[in-house]
Image (cartoon, rainbow, N blue to C red; front, side, top):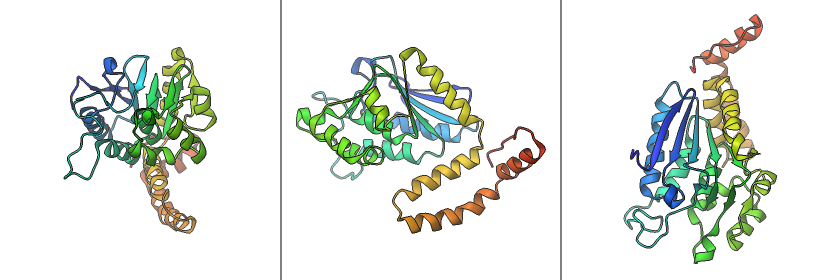
Length: 261
């Protein structure tokens, strides 16, 4: 991981991954995507990490989208024709498949790929001055790799309006359409993120891990398939050490001590 463009910092039960390209409004390129994915993999292996928070450096931008400047190194529209995968798509899939909860800390504008990162995360907290949009159409492009993660979060008509007009959402609109969980002023952003981290860290890691796996796997199933899948997982959850500890703690009227197993 290149420390100059992506920073990974352990903050108690949280690992905070920060895009560090403030002069480019934290725009995404291959180096940034690779850095985020490497940091997520490391955080998944860290037993002290309970929550992963993704953000951008400064207050201006969370991530202004793909770096489309002429000649941008590792830009989103430069691809090896022999490689069918795109780094932005791999990044979104890595975030979605992460076994630990992910929170987008939206400190500023989030455009294009920045919106995709937000939609790939489990939760999102947004500063009230921030905006979320897909302006690609204004330069003759379309946010192809951003469509899949955004389709899973936003209503179709609102999403299509964003795509074909390029008009961004305000923080209030993002909250209204369930794109984010909370909106706060810039001064309260870290407090709200810390509150969510504490709430999540108090719960069973194994239950969260299995629950995330189930929710992600069931997204593309029919309702009967979802129910059969849930039925097969239910006894597995109940057989974990955390489940036994949770039952015992409930009966003994004490706080559970989770092992994550």
